[in-house]
Amino acid sequence: MSAEPKKVDRRSFLYVGLGAVALVAIGAAAYVAMNPPVVTQTVTTATTATTTVPTTSVVTTTVPTTTATTVTTATTVTTTTGVQKPKLTVLYMSTYAPAINDWLTARTLVWAAQRGVDVEVSTASYMEIKPKILTGVETGNPPDLVFGGGDLVALLAEDPKARHIEPIDDVYKELGEDDIIEKLMKWYTIDGKRYAIDLALHANQLHLIKSFVTEVGRKPDELVTWEDYIEFAKEVKRRHPDMYPLGFTLGKCYDGTETWYLTWWPHGGEMCTGRSSTAVKFDSPESRENLQRIIDWYNAGLINPQMLQADEMLNNNSYLTKSAAFIIEGPTPYYAAVTRNPELAGDTILKPPPKGPKGQFTWGSQWPLYTFSASKNKDLAKDLIIFLMKNKAEYKKMILSGLMAVGPTYKSVTDELAKDPNVGHLYQVYKDILPIVTFYSYPLNEPCKAMDSVQANYLIADLFSMTLIDHKDVDTAVKTVGDQIKQIFKQTYGQ
Image (tube, rainbow, N blue to C red):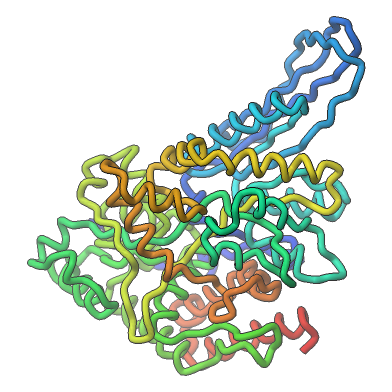
């Protein structure tokens, strides 16, 4: 159970300083929040002809730390050719599942050895990777291949006058696009061309702690709708007055916006139907009703006031410490429970999020691979993407190494895992929620540069601070945020 938290004031509501909107389109932190900051240690290998020379060999490693360091190791490299090999620069997002990054690096090195290519692999956290990518684009020297930063795709590819990302339709053709989940292709399709491909999908699922359900005399299967789950939360609260049963983030961060979408969509909320300010639907009765709904939950003591902080670990920790009865998150917390607290994992049921009067929805985070128009090694980058994904036996190993944390991009691998005698029940949940995975431009459900800007500024989460910290009324909060969203669309599309 959780003790009474300190009150949250305006100064402790942590705003993320965002410069140019395009420079900081922040990705879904749910799936990387488990890692410490990352330092990339890189060394460059020089090649000389048929001789043995002392040189500098660089190894790329990922080290959890809080300070940036660079390690250079003197070694001896023997080469037998005078031909300078091509060198591919690769930037990979560090994930909460180290085995996935280990697999990526290992397969990349195997590919490099087979192709006779030098490769420099660097890693960065989800917060660090986007500034690195954008700095490279702005200076004309982007990485050859990137994994991560999915919400940069529309920002960097939607404008036909400034398309920095290279189309990869040929990659899809080589991999067999008929076997790739359709909506994942749509997320990266702009003007009929595809600009990225998801290595995997991180889809939000409800983490329900069974012991709380049993304690109040219910069964997990009885909990289906939002009304069911809120009544369940109130029953838990009556038994544990100091507990906050809803593990929902309200801070100005990615998870704060997810709380909004996951409660708003099922009650009829819509963001935009096209790419113009007149197509923005946010300022609506559904938005006012949803904001009031969340305020009521907060005032009833169902949500911890500490959740107003911009800390994306708060909801994860509320589950891991059993200070909440359930959360809705990509299976990052479940992965943590499996690896750190098997007893909690055994007390957990993964389920689709609750249904509302307008249907059932969930959030899907992007894990894309892509290359850049300015890259000198675009063809090699595409070849590496194919190598990483085409061998489905190896690909399946990568998915399983994440312990259910991510699901496959391939339909066939999804079907195969759902039938697995050991983990099939978990991947069946993933398969079941695929039809309800929703993009944040819903109901447009397409890449949208303006919506990437809205997400970069976490504008939706301002609703919570305006009403719960600044005590503004619901109408004012919804109108203010709605006007800001319309202005971004107008600035982006000129109408």
